[in-house]
Image: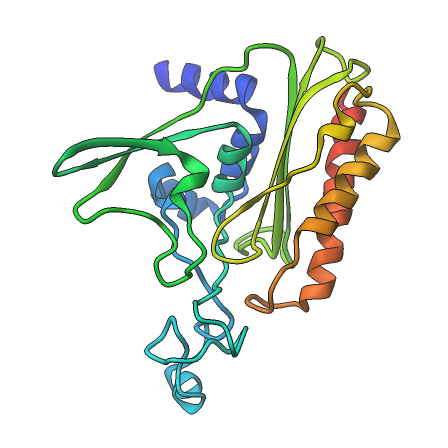
Amino acid sequence: GSEMCIRDSVQELFPSLAYAAGVIASPLIRNMGTLGGNVNLDTRCRYVNQTHFWRTAIGGCLKAKGDVCHVVPKGRICVAAMSSDLVPVLGSLDATLVNQGPSGPRELPLLEYYGADGTKHIKRLDGEVTREVRVPLPTGASRARYAKWTVRKSIDFPLVSVALRFDLASDSVDAEVTGVSVVVGVLGSKPRALTRLDEVVGQQLSDPAVAQTVAERAYAQCKPLENVPYDAPYRRQMIRVHTQRAIEAIVAGG
């Protein structure tokens, strides 16, 4: 009853969020997991995801009892990757996070909850738990989509991910873009919201130049690190590819 109505409402109002929630890990993990858990997901790094013997052989890393970052050897902070599927999507939808702690509730824009240090990438205060994630209802016509690239179609964390939202002058992919939000994940310890996207505002979303421009902006502004499997230059190319494919899929969807 009510659970079905809530699910249908999320799918109708926030299709990119519904899709992202449905491609996290595996059915078993999805049935056990929570929205708050995915928002507070720990960072991961290829140098941590090894046996104890392997980690000991290199003296550990900043995230695992060492004092060196093997991804960026001269770096002062850990750059383990934040691989949550929901965070880029929620960021693209202008979500707000509400944490509850000993001093009461604390509200902040969701993207401001994340920092650049992979050992403490969330700005959670002592004693806090995540109580709510608030997503504003769309005020007009829009299109949104989430794309993740993985080796396998299930279980895997994304190797790169991109969440997109286009606000439109009317409910058609041939309408002019009035606003755009693109958030990319799996770069470092926090997601990256793209800037300098004003060029596509005023253009028709169905114009192929929009997909090409946004994809090139994503490629130019996002530089993955060698913190998860697969070479960073290849992952960077995948950001461009999946951003363009995502927009083309939105247009094809009408």
